[in-house]
Length: 215
Image 1: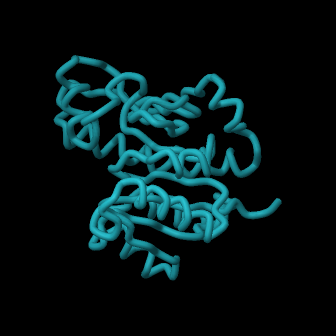
Image 2: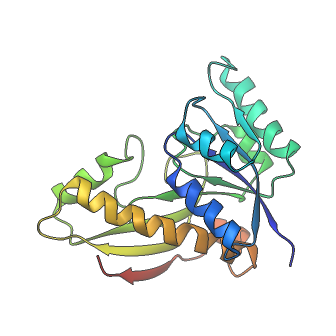
């Protein structure tokens, strides 16, 4: 089996990028990260990639003020590195039509809730966990989904549940959810690499799998 050629997009700390890098290094993920692209030239994520010897690129409104030019540059950078699958790892910008077209059904993201709950515009980071607690939900979790033109809208391909504890704060819940992201995301990428998950079928309406975990 050949190695899946990955491109990773990240904006900030890059802990999910690190989880993917670690899984690739230890052989549990049969993938090669061909390039890491960040819209933040000073992100920890891009430094993680540089330290690992992975090619990096900074593409943002600072490098390409016109959104269409930025979109084209992003697609071109990924294609230049012969990327097969794009993984968003804390990437905070909506993708444009050029990138979505070039990698149709080949872009995935991890989100810190059980989508479709607590997703959409403005729902990221601590805001998600605050909303879960405010709603009084007893269960939260992680979703890996196919990316389309709307935030957190594409079909879910894997989920993992995390119990919400009575004493939880947004920070404590976030920490347990993030730990499960670091497990589920590389596992899901491996299932894509082996063909166990068919992204074309997922984009057309396949059902997500659900895995229960203890906090």
